[in-house]
Length: 485
Length: 95
Image 1: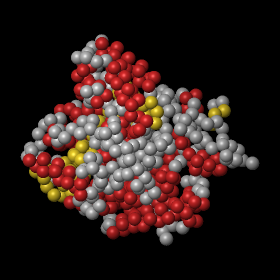
Image 2: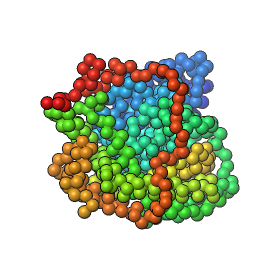
Image 3: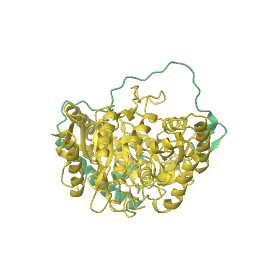
Image 4: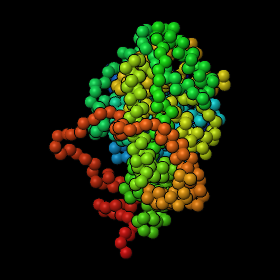
């Protein structure tokens, strides 16, 4: 086994026993990047120079007997997270030359714990997309099949983890952007409860939905990273002052007697029979382990996508008003007066999908349409949340497919926004309700593409997600396939 | 038609976007499809449902009223496409 293939907890053991040093791990990861990055393109930029400085610093701490669970571990950051003094583009031309003057809180926290940052991972522009095809900096390919998309918007982060171009990564999830690419790349991805992780320094897309979370090779690594990124942040007024447990305590515990809800609305027309087969397989494995599987109903499921594609663009149109060519980012040289400068800057700086969503958002918020669209969607959102409240009064966790199909072909949905939006159909509801969700590998299609199983739990019940996902992972451990790239 | 080309151009203007003729055509078709899809929500009875704007019930987040260090203005200006002294410079606003 090469070092780059290992997990955080495996490497931590080796570092503790002084079998390897952080520098060697980083060498191994950069060696891997040299071998596959040309094909995958998981990164927008690499942080080689500072990474080696961080690795040396970590080695100094480790030889002094000081360490954390992530000291010296190479981690990729989605390029939506501000990194002080290092370009942060959000996958957009409009931020091509933006160098943040501060670190995102999660970046600061990982830094303080001695993590090593490998680079900034590719993503859909402003996290708007489900395939990483809207990035201004080019597409990312799925390590399991180079003709397929890696999912999105955190496609670079998920592909980097799957292709071993980092040990773990951070992504962000507004409608499934951690869980969907994690599922399609065969890795673990967790979207925490809204408010669990500080959004300070996360470039805003839809502020009432955005959350940062880990993308990792296994559930244990996910539990480890969660401990370091979660918690209250005085700089972020929607972060919640709930104590952060050590999520590792939820690993490898049994789930006997647990009630697992399976919503009947999630097994709909359009779900790939191969995906359905894998999900049903996971359900029967968990049943055999002593969990009780109950059919539940989330009756407003068919309205989630429409609700989301009103609320998210509405918030985005407001958040993205700040890109005006004045304070930072790209400015078009073609504007003769202020209005023209704004328009040319934004029209040249944003790509198609971003423009489309800004226009939808502006439209649904405009006088005369507000009630019919935005207000209506906010009411349906309340009903979607109510569905979950009711479900969680009866079950511990909910199990669903993460996505209706495995990774689709590059270009397949690029020009069909609604088809693209529907690929988030199973992940969106968690963001609308603010609840946490995890995607864990559940098996493969006949073509050898990974399929993800999603668990959802009530607010601040990330521990239950870790416990359920860890139990399933243990049951599936015999099928340890690896991507072709 | 839910939205006409003229409306798309007007909404784009409100959002300070300038669209090419080709974009106007493409976006109008796509936005019509999207708005039509959203019609679905009219099937839901939302009478007396309080709109939800946040996932977690929050009270106001206050902090002590004391001076803390903030971003230095040279750093705040460091990314400006056209900084001039202590200012952001923009094209002429008044003739």
